[in-house]
Image (cartoon, rainbow, N blue to C red):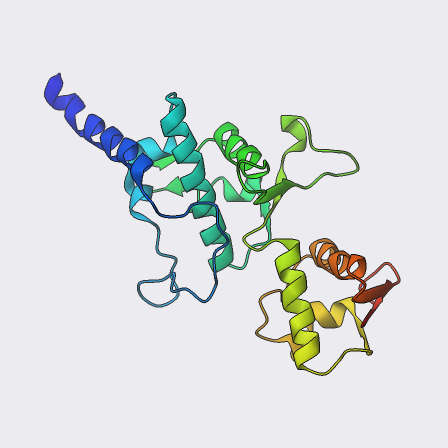
Length: 224
């Protein structure tokens, strides 16, 4: 019996030892940092290979570290794959939450718990539930979340920096042009959901650096 339990205990000790890791877990992930070992495949961290990582632990100290590591992994994965909006129904079976080589996965309830943590101040506000006509308070409402591997304020700075560098202050651009046109090709926010881009633009509006006219993708944005 002891021999049978030894591998599992070893993995558990590996997970517990992560508590002392100094690697940042809730900071923004730079897309300029190498995230691949070969080609463009996402390189998962070592702790992704520990079976206990896919079961939220009862020990509160271990759980706190585990939530930080899941947050870091989700941010890195979404940054690498250019994901702004995470649908739980699709993501639950994706490599992000399912390690097929271990035959382990993080269950849906645990995924929601991780995202709940990410949505708190303790989790550095790196996620936010997308509400459909109401606040996502109940589990039934928590089906999709924004993942802030960069916060709206950070994206706002990047958009405004691009406008400044390209000499477009005082000009009017459409929301569609900011999301999909050839002129923004290669920019990190390309393909961002319109709702999220508008949140970024709202930051600039509040700063007095932009004004938005209209309510759809043909809406105009004037930068100051």
